[in-house]
Length: 504
Ligand code: NAI
Image 1: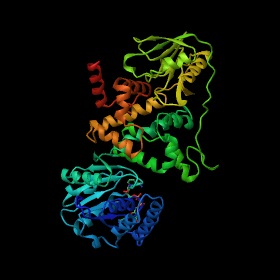
Image 2: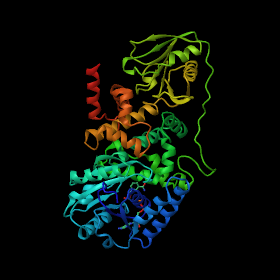
Image 3: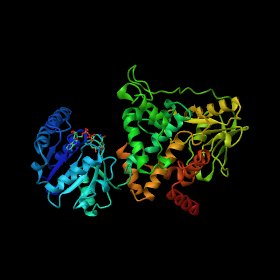
Image 4: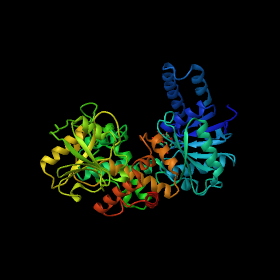
């Protein structure tokens, strides 16, 4: 046992996918670990399975024989809780059911010492509710790992109403000692990650519901800004039953706040048994083998143009500086208009504008809007939409210009916020509300989203990039268009907006 590690002996309850992973990580850090499961033989089976996966790591040279032997020796499968009464910490990873967890915690209290910390790996239940009725509820804390536990760095350290700050601090420090990145969270529906991530799925489902575009385009647009998977392919991988259940739980736990309303598109998939990859069909069809969602990245030829205007408004100062040189390479000279109230290109009566959230049709007859994007090599997929009054020539010209600027443009319906802008604005909005409500701080939200679900950046990093004025503008446009509660602006973001205005 490493003398700097707190809690020499640990009991992990539940030898399923999460419990086995937690036991491995704890043993790898040097703890003695008891592993127990209600199902007879399950703890021993988990131990045997762990041996197989550690052997794979040994073959790959990621662990030495001494390390593998040490981990396996330190994990001891036991048959009953009473066999592990000498531990300083329990980590519970049993079935996600409040009554079952509460019964277990009550039993633990009768078996274990007063100062033994009781941690739950629950992903959706209230830590306060699990602790309710216990003699010493201050020692109950959430220790929310992510799957697969040995790989994923994030641990949400969740404090309920009663959790003592000393207990939360001890679990925070322990997670660090295990090589994890802990983030403090207050026990609220979805904690940090499962809450802030809702709009990633919800906006994609809203676009599908309104038939704004195809799942292939949505996924390609989100991948183009650095997500490893688009929301549709990711929901197919997670399983729509699981994703729908989490959405419903967060919705109900928020007293049916419309912000979190589940989608009819997803309920139809679940009702019809199209659960995703595991059932062969979800949003995509996997029956013909593996499915790489693709889009047409052909661009249109650019007609001869000698000059155009490059508009830039002050708050969009990050508009790609490489555009003038790209246009020059296409033989087009640019005049810069810096005092404009929009950002983009003007040629003749065509305005090709970066979205401010409003549909193109709300901005003028000959307007085409394009989506938010981040600079990167290759031809980045980018959504655009045309005003219902735009001429076919202007739409084709806009498409050709976007191609010349290095994009693979994809036309979508003229709805507010296109694909990326509406999704990122809503992710930022949700994170802002989480901070406003004391669920976590902004650094915690960024770390959680990057390490818990592999986001390419955190919501507050996106906020820094696009700025509060642009984010609020997109949300206001969505709110105006759809009305209702869903797109209301977080009070935290309104303050960030005022701050940005005073600083300007
Ligand atoms: P699992 O179904 O793989 O394993 C649960 C295990 O607990 C089973 O082996 C079952 O026999 C055992 N069990 C059930 N009731 C028990 C009891 N009263 N006493 C002792 N053992 C009992 O489930 P999984 O996925 O490992 O999830 C466990 C917990 O971790 C849940 O609370 C879940 O919400 C949470 N979680 C799951 C994640 C995932 O991706 N699967 C991610 C993060 C948290």
